[in-house]
Length: 107
Image (cartoon, rainbow, N blue to C red):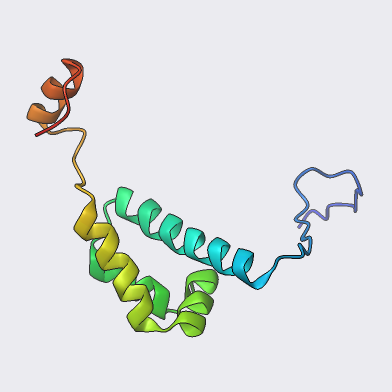
């Protein structure tokens, strides 16, 4: 197996940096991250229950840590809020494509 020599200028090296945040800023960032995770996986077509399951599995480190910190009920409320307030449309939906191409908002 090839060994890669250490290069301090390697752009692919993962570097973590601590950022000083107030409690309010940390809370805001956590909520934003929760919503981003939900949004990303919903856009990939994951249903509500699969997204909730991801927050319960240690394999998905960050969602799991957030769920342990905030509680399953809190995560469920955020997921329900996302799915309850947004309409997910398929780009392959003929009616949507015709409507979007005409410049109108989808029904």
